[in-house]
Image 1 (tube, rainbow, N blue to C red):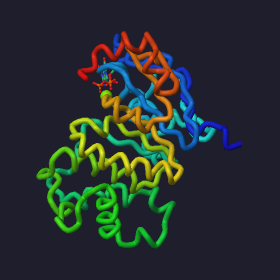
Image 2 (cartoon, rainbow, N blue to C red):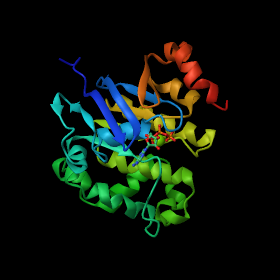
Image 3 (spheres, rainbow, N blue to C red):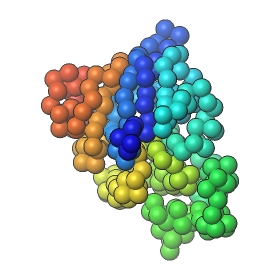
Length: 251
Ligand SMILES: Nc1ncnc2c1ncn2[C@@H]1O[C@H](COP(=O)(O)OP(=O)(O)OP(=O)(O)O)[C@@H](O)[C@H]1O
Ligand SMILES: [Mg+2]
């Protein structure tokens, strides 16, 4: 019973005019699994995230969450069911303090569903969540307007907004991009903690070394198709992957 996948993607495709952004992609995510998604620029990784979360309507194919079809639902209903994503391109409310940016997830219906005393004082919860992802409380970083924060904090804010929703599945689209090695090293334990709490995680990443250290499994995208799916070590060794992707990786 626990073997049933939490997420199942079946023949998912997206055409943008003549551009085949995604073509018949299939995979299952098991509960508690951390799956990496890698592939060159433009290979369809963000499109895959957009189709699962329904920010973009699939041309064809189906997505199942806990055995139920979700690919016809609008994004807000998908969030409510328990799938949260972060964005590759962060777009916070730049004029609001970081902790006020947490208002959106903390006032969402998902929070009402999960209602507990913890969510009574939302500003306090926002500050707690931001501290969890590395906003140093004694330096009052959470009170700075988002527009004054460097990329590292904006990425952490993205993560905190997703954590606030207490989803079953996190989909993290290039959370590590634009971050220093030291910053990545401080975020990895946060992700590991989510795993310990039983969360399922999909990480889209270009930072392969850091990803392969924490991923159970990796799928590889190339020109909108999934070209490999397996343990990180197996995928690294595959010739198709080397020629499609690793040759283009700077390091
Ligand atoms: N809204 C859109 N309209 C038209 N074409 C799009 C749209 N979104 C994505 N595409 C195209 O679909 C393809 C896949 O793009 P996508 O953003 O999914 O790639 P990616 O793997 O996330 O790339 P990156 O690593 O640069 O983030 C690209 O050719 C892109 O130009
Ligand atoms: Mg992308």
